[in-house]
Length: 142
View 1 (cartoon, helix red, strand yellow):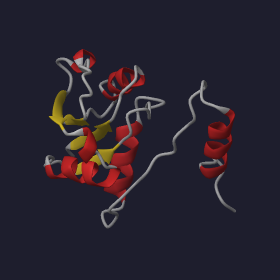
View 2 (cartoon, helix red, strand yellow; view 1 turned 30 degrees about the horizontal axis):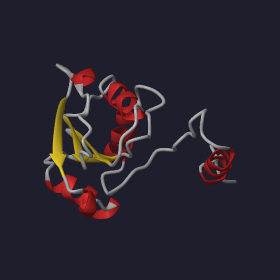
View 3 (cartoon, helix red, strand yellow; view 1 turned 90 degrees about the horizontal axis):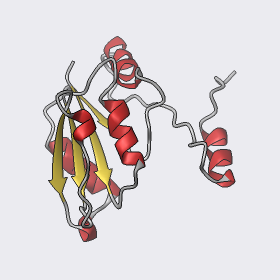
View 4 (cartoon, helix red, strand yellow; view 1 turned 135 degrees about the vertical axis):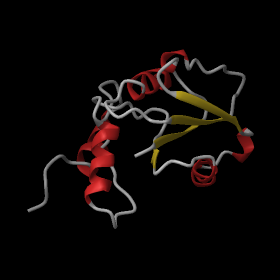
């Protein structure tokens, strides 16, 4: 199945480079990564994906950046079977993210969505660590 990854980009940090690097080393590579970028005078370095994955940069105005509308714009630019929405700072923890998400969707053909747990960054603040561990506990419900 063809997979595209959509990432809205607003004032990116170096973490975006790490996200792109990890996406381009997945066991199931995306067909393309669509970056909807406000630019903000920053040139994105997408060289980590060279010769591995197509990266499409779509410029958008900062004043038009909106989490919902921006993602929807990315969906309209994709013709993939599966569209994975990510944030610019959600670094894949391993090379199996896209493989596992697509497996779940293939096993459940009536499903329209699947999601993955986000692990807090080691350098994030205490409140974020508490929030993420509470909201996204690895424990299964009884």
